Image (cartoon, rainbow, N blue to C red):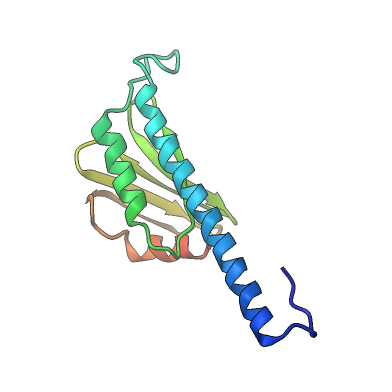
Length: 144
């Protein structure tokens, strides 16, 4: 929604509030879709991929959902993924950056990221509720 030189200050404020509300609604819809995609993994059965894929446990899925709900607003929402081992993951791939976070249902997660210059960041094991490593957090914030 563009502003016109003829718009009064009140009209400009209304347009700006409307735009913010639209963006918030879109973000909420993306968040809801992500949570639904993660919950849909509960429907996977053993051998779901035709290669003896293990279905993720409810605990694994809930760990991923809990993490998503704790993401700082400055970080764009990730895409979900599931591995044949039953690991549930979240990933970002944009602007030459790839990052992923994995959950195995034991109350921990691992994380890894690499930027377009080959700089790597991550940890092998963090307790759920821990903050992401500062270098990975910085990398993800550049995607916003």
